[in-house]
Image (cartoon, rainbow, N blue to C red; front, side, top):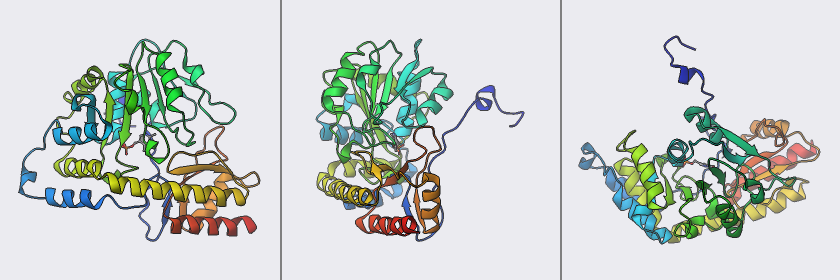
Length: 353
Ligand SMILES: *Cc1c(COP(=O)(O)O)cnc(C)c1O
């Protein structure tokens, strides 16, 4: 605490990201990064973007990237907003589309950045409890609100809502913005991008960090009615005119265009997840049904914090949240088959000790 801090800074409770340890030969299954490298075409595009033109500012509107994203989703560039990671896009969403008279709604167990943005922008919120099996019940969101935000699939549970359930949610909330955070949708869900043309209250947020292996480049985007997009542009142009640098724009554009590599790597992650599910179940874990690139699992006889610590001693890191209701779960990112195999071997050793 410093005397020079503003009242706003004094009042903040910042988000705590998963650890990025600087230890060699660690199996890192704690922050849902993709185990596969970015598309070779994206890497070539980024390499060739490192040239004399870096002395010039990038395209402030990232038109090339917006077109590539629009093409991928069958939408128009005016329905696309891009930002420096979807976390930045979400920050603009909280300030620009979710800050109203009434509290916004989000699940009690969800992405822990949401309450942090509420704190930053003074947005009131009401948490809506997941059901007994850790699922979102969309009927619970049919109540007066200043907006709704939820990840689909949800984080950190991995549980998926169908497109029909999303549509029910949209119809029940025509007077407020419904934000669907699809950070993990490419690993088994159906994107609500297909509903953007029909629902002016829908904003879909996606990221290139997970399914396109570009967490290090920080690119995310939102899809919605041009008026919602325009609201976000107004904030962006009052905050930072050039959030995406030249290298990021080049790499992200190529990554969106390389559909073959995208499909190949996400299918590989899905196949590994299904294998790991079976192996964890065989070890006695209860694994929630996941449509993401991670699984959320608990062992009836072992304390989750102790399991995480024992894995760490074996140089494998997973995520454990000291949060009510989920403090006996581990969130395990899907690695390569080799990494998953090492995890299963380590768990066998720990459980038999
Ligand atoms: C990873 C994640 C994000 C943030 O992704 P970035 O684009 O890397 O900022 C947003 N929402 C959820 C639910 C996530 O898990």
